[in-house]
Image (cartoon, rainbow, N blue to C red; front, side, top):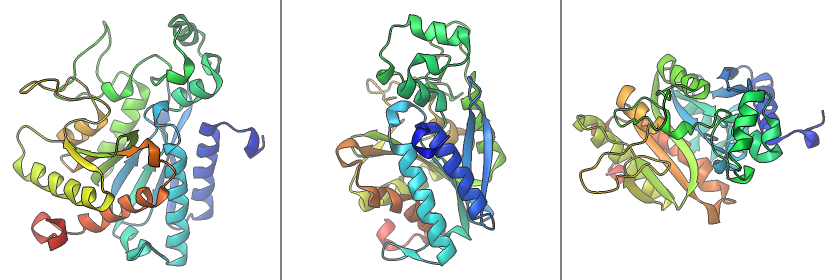
Length: 303
């Protein structure tokens, strides 16, 4: 099959695999799990650091082109690392990634993208396929996985609330795959990317002053660099409806904040600027630069 004939998921999967082959001395490709419709979920590790940060997109097809943007960013980082280039004015890619590597997961939910691109007939499992067709929902609006579960609400957080009978937290293959990466890797932060109105959302803990302080300061710094608004709470629409109420969603950002206890930031890109790649390309590098300092050692411009 030629590249032109491939769908979005296949293009991203094989492009990540090719990067792993081409830059094998500092890049590793791996499959972190399989979707409920048996599609492999790819991840690319770039760099040689003992710890990492995790960059995630494609939790739902509503993220649209962001998986392709993360793939493009990964290619830039690989070329810059190999050639020892600087990105932007001062980001020495090889130096940064030799300290803390980046784990890129551009498409956590491949089934959603296949449905959006090819319709419900793209689902191989006949039971799941028929259940989805019975919903009579436009495929371009479909954002769940092959079983009809919203992954942004499936993580076992303190705020999780079951919405259906027999629906338990971490019930989905995709959710469990990401949780296993969180648990396996020594990581210093989670950055998730989605479309919204230009916000950086930072997750808080009910009991964790030091964590909340560090998370806020890093989020505030990235907010200044990007020009986005800064909000506290949960990404992906999980907002507190009234003062004193708790969010009801089980988001990956909140799970990471509660369990891994490292900064968890949702970068919500404004759709009207989605073709502007430069900011998106610099945000992970700026985060890498920032985490090289402890909270007490952050330069003045981080305050």
